[in-house]
Length: 173
Image (cartoon, rainbow, N blue to C red):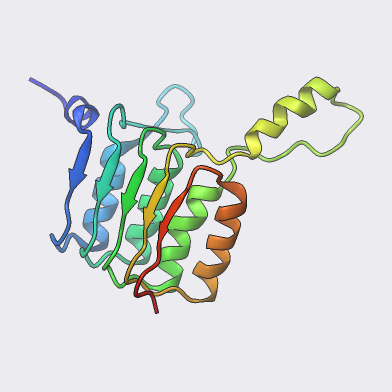
């Protein structure tokens, strides 16, 4: 018998539009694809069950703040995912900002100039300024609510994440 991890690891395309999964379904989905490292038992070391998935479409599912926060955390570690669609959820400004912000969060903090670190260590630390998710090229946020918070998050994302090349913002209010 296959485990859930085995099944999820084989999915390349997930189309779940118009299923009305809401926040609870989005959280469950994010949890299915993300797990904590059992070896370190820390709350900030996550891995994903994404082995082959390249596209996820969760449009028109009434996903808001709680669901978007969980999906955003999942996206931070989903390094095979190139396309993510949460269009037509009519999500709030805060919800969309959570997705966008999580994609652009650096893996670790930057080591400031300090005499305790040599040049090699400073150069190595600079790589951690890149977001975890370095595969996402297509982000569809069409027909959601984009206010000041989401707009500021988009601006930061475009500065910190160089892989996002397609950003869909049609019919956003």
